[in-house]
Image (cartoon, rainbow, N blue to C red; front, side):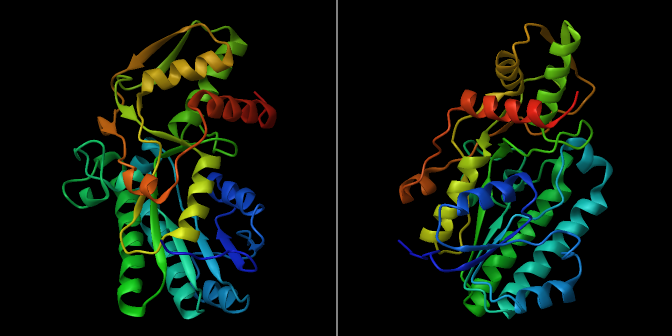
Length: 313
């Protein structure tokens, strides 16, 4: 198994203010490395020359590329050009600049939406490009597929030790709590917490509530990313997840238990469900020696408590 010691390294976390990037920064505090970050005011990742100059001036040894334009089904549907253009530019700028600056290792974070809509379940890494994408997030998926292939191409042509990982749906502290553009866990936490405060008897779910999804706690994601950075070096990307899924209704019921809300759910079936099922085969990652440690209810409790502590309702 490959070994890349982070001790003494200068490590840049691109996208450190996002949910995934912030969790990686927290996890790196347990490593004897120097963590570098740059706010959007300091460095615009959409500006190629600025990215090259910033990296070249800082002697960076390793990069976690967690920066991305992200959002849920509605955001993907209404801002397709943004999702495709901005993600392509961010990953192209950072990956090429890392090669030019002599960065020793880079880890690119993708998304499980890269897989075909009707991919065999659980989804193995080999299912990439084996069928049509889910239309509700194809713009984001295409950009993430390009990032994976870019890492693989730089490995083949230039010998760069660039690797990619595909996380399951993330949740946890620092999520974007935005009803229009947020992910499903954050959106449901907002809705259910508001229903508890307002004594509402029902909460409406988009779609049928039947689609099945896999969820990964942010701190587990960060631990997996550090593990892969230290112990994996190959062209094939790795799935990061738990290998377990649940329906959207079961997710909502779990949040309701944590929030102490005893109402019922209704369904807006005019809204899209997205892919019918998304759960990943994580056997490759497990064979390397890593498994997720956070029980789902414990993770939801931490995510809910963070939301209550950080947002006025």
